[in-house]
Length: 488
Ligand SMILES: Cc1ncc(COP(=O)(O)O)c(C=O)c1O
Image 1: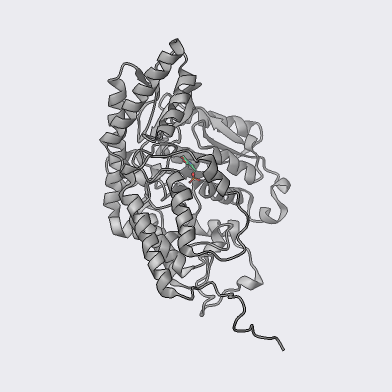
Image 2: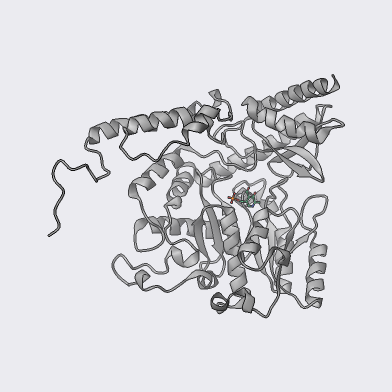
């Protein structure tokens, strides 16, 4: 007979012996992270990790217990001060949301419930379904549309491409693989599309070369005539065009493709229409921007992130598919151990695992549900409008400074500019690094038309005019100092 452990055996339960002590530690941890957010302006936006701190992350696997308060002390010393910085209003790099305290608290509750949203019949799944229903209404999708939380838009776009592939080749392709398909599928997107679209073509087995990269006009939007010509050319050569991907908010400058025009092309050519709205889609909440998203109601699938302009803490990507049956047929896989019932915990089919590759799934929906309910979509929309107004303010500051030049049209919330110099590429790349290291502001660098530019993407709801002023002042100072030392 199996023996039960002796009373003095080492503990195997992971719950505390001293719940009161854990509560005290927990309350302090909560206070300190809220202090961090409340006092974020007093901190540098970002600071490099000192070598000794980095070295502490090379320690051995901990085999023995350590007090929670000590581990939290390590977090406060080694992790918190060296985070990405996107909670800070001076963070303008890439496209990062600022998060929000209600989302932080919801994330804690979600961890407490430890719910697995792959499937089964429980309230957390109803929270996710509630958000799917809200998004259907927001984007004018039909009742039959399905939706799913994923890590981010890279994964959401991949799901869009996989559903489009199954729609084009039939679900039998899932057994035989794309190699067996007679059709040579081709997809279309613009030169300004995010790299994850090409990556999705790669992962889907269709190949990056099957993605036709269509040029953009001066406004960085896809050239629809060139798209139509490319489709005709491919058809003439025996290819089977199957997918067109539009972008609502390009990662380089925030351009919004002519989504209605793309929807017309897709309809006429019988292509799957997918929209990558990573950050731009939620601009539908901003009355000043929403009209420019005309046509966003028409795609077959739509990908976007709540963790960008939705300000939900990372990660919270989302994909919605107009034809829910098609979505399901791209992923659902029967398995005896996932047997469905009409009653009991195994009820509630279809389950989220039928709509994507993940079986175990966390409760991303809760922090999104809290964020949407606590702030309301009108306030989130106001923060989006304000980001765009701040981008215009930054543009006006650049235009007023003879040392600076604007290097792309400002269409949404992204401003690309540079310090004028005969050696501008090197200088602007250096200025970006120096700005980040100064802790004053954190833009990122990109290349537009062969020129290295300073790129400020204003996403954080905490950003104000004074943060833009600080960015301009520091850029001018750093640019002048570097020009002077280069001349010397
Ligand atoms: C237009 C666009 N698409 C896709 C992505 C990828 O999104 P994620 O980082 O959430 O995977 C981004 C990220 O900034 C983006 O701007």
